[in-house]
Image 1 (tube, rainbow, N blue to C red):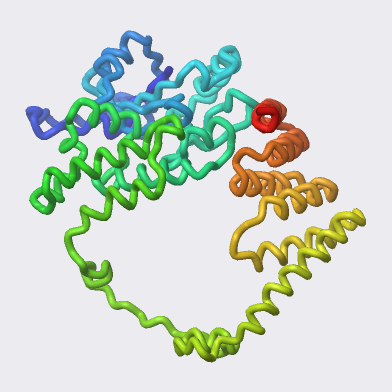
Image 2 (image 1 turned 180 degrees about the vertical axis):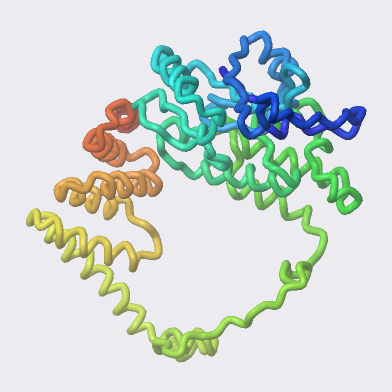
Length: 390
């Protein structure tokens, strides 16, 4: 990997002896100024980069992204104590080594001394470019593009870790610190004296549970509430602690009879007839959507199902699946994929949701991911058949 010396690399650190100011160039003798002297592109061997980062030490990691860290950025020092940032890619990050060499050589041919906009990497599955600045992305989303309930737990862990540390620590590095019993090293130094060590340890360990690579190893929401509740020391609203003015909630100008009765907390005035009418409207909307779906009027089916989704308090996997198929028939695979994923959230082991995702992914040209969805769907279908036989 090539590196360049930036102008900031010559800034002295506080512990260095002050150097004599550089003499001014003699323009009369043809000497050039700094503006004309562009640093040459330098190439470093793996041994030099390993020495610059103390053997790619985890203590020098400044950022990480991708599935199980396909690329890491280290801070280090190379020749003449020049400060540099070194990005290390895994083998999976670049599926075609010859292409990588050709692209790296192209940078040198252009003569551009700044390796900017290097935040894009090749995806090993389909060769498309994606941004690698995915600080809160769960590993399973990077692997499959799917979001599951446990993905929210992972994101909560990253937010909790950021709050405790005051900075973004790569999750794998944070887990190494926690396993090494260096829990207090994770904590923000500016919070020192404002918490008990036992509470800090409990929160850091909770974050580590949320950041487990395998989704099945992460806790559920009930566990999080049970773990966090005992740590609350003050029964004071957050806006009071932060000295913020709380704006009173203004009631809407027009309320239905049911809304007015609830606002007055008048139980005797509740209109159950109106409540029943709302349920009837929802049933009618679903009925019209099902009729349009059976008649292959997919545009009308999408309209009715979309209206139904906005009316439902609890999502329905069946509605999402039917709207997904309608979107596919209308040539809109992106929207179909979204609805199929929503159906999977409603029913995590429903084969139909996986099969529709596979179909939508195939329409989008993502054959590898489509095959993964087909395999998952077939696995859950076989599991269901075995349970019926038993």
